Length: 391
Image (cartoon, rainbow, N blue to C red):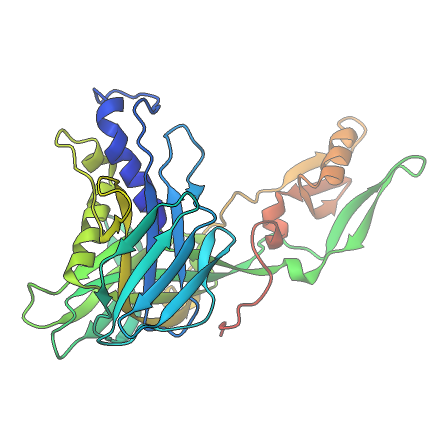
């Protein structure tokens, strides 16, 4: 998700002075646009296929960044090893699995399709420190009760000090208005409604979402290199994602001081309050430069960081025993279609059944009760595939 911050933040930095002269609401459009390459690359001590993302800054009025296609990308180390990357669905993925090793120097090399070349500083893997614990506690934050998810770790050598966190959260979804029947319609001359059996696989689903913010922690000013109950996520007790069973995978990256300061600056510039302040920030420089044009602005960072992961699970009933479940993501109150002769919105119901705009929920006394599709079929917005790690 860092690429989103890199591109969005730098577009503001490069364009804000020439596009805004007051704080009144204004439809932003680029006047003096400066295109720049955006590079996101992190390799870790995990044995896996690593990835590099290449894109370009974009104008405010554009839909999003443009993927930099056709580039030659590889990572080299000071032992003469080279790890090639190949283009794959908007990213560059290493051809083979590899892992960053301690005391070895790594460097990112890129040549784009138009002949421009870029190279990073040589970076060394940071200290590997495991997460000792991730816990979930019920607390109240800014007047809102919810679940606070905390991480703990300790480096007895005091050589880490700078940490960055990401998370992946996965949650079980139970369709609140699921029933075993689907309502269908037979066209004339039959001209009648009929039922079919609804697939059981549409009742329970699992969704996974990734963190979309920069989460940093420094212990440099502490007496010991200990991360203690540091909050990485807060979830309101009214958020449907914890209604049943919830899991979070917390990732802890140990960063060097240069990388930490880069992310801290990026974090600060990502807030509109900072970007639109009277004191305008300068260009956010990372550890990658152009070898073909010394004046070219290059956005991004080549990060070589040790990573540790830890996953926990909890049920809503574990933390809020006896309490009603949070409301679903949308209102599931059924729509009423009364087919009594005096009312008879038959044409409306036929249209809804044929288009699937609503799903069958109940029928009594010539009245059909219909609900929005997500309420009766979770596969309309999620996946019914059980994750391999699920417990």
